[in-house]
Image: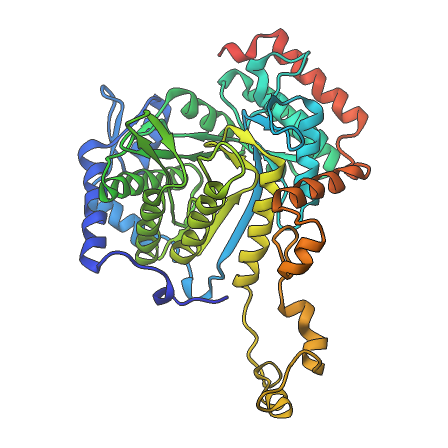
Length: 475
């Protein structure tokens, strides 16, 4: 599917876009960002920021930021092809046993099976671990950023790059260096590290130290942000968009100051703070609305964009889970040209459900079918076929149907597809029964993932043992 910039959903007028843009520039100039590091403040001052060391604030003049935007490389939206990612995130979650329906603590065997299911399900791009959902017997909980890599690689889940403690940085470099050696790849290609702003508008000391530590060794650490409407951002859609845009622009400034990046990416993840809880939630329409505003502003800037979606508050597989995930994922595609599905994740990233992963994989393959280019040729317009069949005829037995049926018509795995009579004759299986059986079938065969070599695993464990012995997580 190809879409022109005018094809995307644009909820704002041009005047409203400019108002939000100017408001974000005011935030960066009048409020600024608290940066809790002298060396990082110096770097931003050299780059062009206005630094107040007493308050640890970095501010940026509106004209300077507008020049920064203007001089950034422009993203070609006319060539953009909408994409949907679908990964199975494994966070500090509970495991929803598909056989019993009970929530259980993760252990290594369920972690292994969950990652294996993500590799085998059509539509899921694989598993990603942020931290680790169980505490290994020989590795203290504070060293989760290290065990995340060990067990992720061992069982085929990509580590997201958690750092947490600055004292772990040298050991993370060693772990990645050993992994790069095993893969025969450069360290810079294998290395992953990530952190977040403490929203609103604060880059804390640990993140600064970690970014600068890795930078001094030629390695990059990404910094993201996650706001909650009514919590760490204003409760209004426009106010939350302004806060998202200000933080997103700051992170772009930071990347250019650190690494010289010339591209510009505008995106922001938004939750909704329900003050009746109080609790921050996903899957709400306001989350989608903020993403649509940021997507429109990104196109106005000539920047790339991505929609935050595919998430749910539901505590179990349900109509709520399906509707929330579909709402935000599809809206992200229509407004930002790119979106994602968090396969299997429920209850605001606190439950991993194999059954839900099956449903999300089904949704992902369905949406990706919609995103495929529509082939318009003499053959596919089928005028000759229509003439041959004529009025009142049927296309069931035509050559075109026989030749192209499998590639033209998407085939579901768990959605009902029989006539009512055939469904009743087959025992009236529910989608839940089909999903559970598919989980059993995919996990029944032998694990095909090579994992880590025994030698590499031993080396990684030795590095982690050294980190524990030196108390590295204490700093």
